Length: 298
Ligand code: FE
Image 1: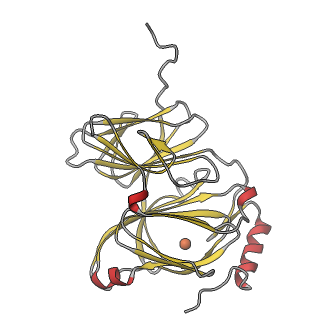
Image 2: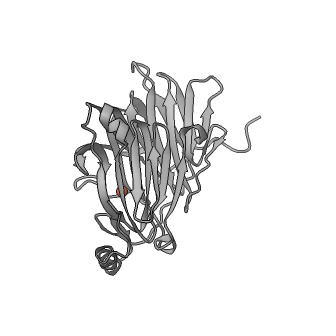
Image 3: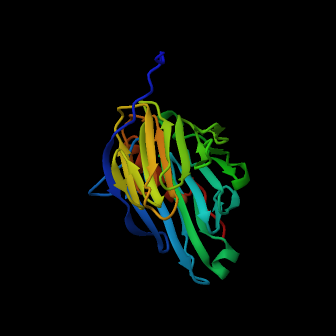
């Protein structure tokens, strides 16, 4: 007989945004679908999405992001190729290699640098990765900074029964795999690889904002073709997000699916600080300038 629980509805696409090429830091090419002046300003609770590269870097050409502060949100770095080094004003240091994730909760603030790892800079090679910024709710904006650094081998992976869909679960849950990273609000951060012609339906509660960013191959989302460097924003009108890999694409589709409960608080944003009020932004600048976020010894 018919199931007592009707199958959830697939969400429709609200809009499609192209990532704008931007030079960041010392001159790192990123594709940035948001924020942009013309398009999407932010996407509660996501504040920024940067695809770094992909670039084939010659020897000694790799660039990075020298000392800069953050307060009031989280930066999440996911490398696909290449290696970065990280240092902060509290003496924390580490490397982020291909497949690794660094989930940094800046909270009350720190100064850090994100630079190409010394050996990678020397040899050059392929650089490709993502950095997203996730807002923190008011109650967590001034929490002590924390790091969750997860090497590639510890990122859970799921696979469909027919083997045509694979997922790396950075946050949330998919295809039987559950993330090891803890988030302050419910967040899903999923990296899907889908063979041409195959499809996936990911449950996403109606209460969550969600988008899909295509970075390899081509997708069909809600009947529309979506090529690489494009982001599709979904309506909150269903419980599933259906992702199809275009059958005529010569390579597997690779996408990020990001979804989260919106925070719904006022956003005061200036450069590396994201707070609730303008006064809190001024305080952040004051604290940074007077060294209360620390400095990195060189
Ligand atoms: Fe940073």
